[in-house]
Image (cartoon, rainbow, N blue to C red; front, side):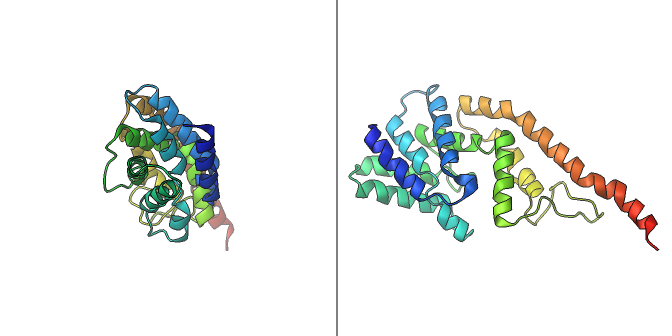
Length: 225
């Protein structure tokens, strides 16, 4: 890929980024993760992979405005249209579209090509470890979700069985389940190396959220007439 082509794709990507948790730096981390993973794989079309990484979140604006919209599906169409309108071949544009369409965690179809699998793993690497925790907290703040929900015992819930969105719900519903879903050996190795740090953060934050309720609430009750 020429620097001119890279610049074209990068400029379009930047023009579509509004969400602080899915910003230009997230996209670049995904791209760099993908380059690392690809160096361990065979017969990778690097140009397709670069384009797919740069364009994988161009549908985020639409999903942020309407959560019922799938950013992967919308982004796949936008990526295809952009590439075709700038003279890329049907084969290239279609391949990138398929990669973008299948990169999402909540997916109806799994990625099939090696490029799609690398993109999937590279994107998920930015959702594991403490980076995944930090980005989730960032996103939850943007949409107004709380850290935790209250359990029936009056203590902050750990997220298990919750039906209302919160950080702890997202951790139990998604973040802690990501580690078994990688397609490449390199992606899986990198993810597992980050797992312990995320687990330690989750349990430490849960303990600090619960501590005031377990210690100070009873004292308050005794001080009230």
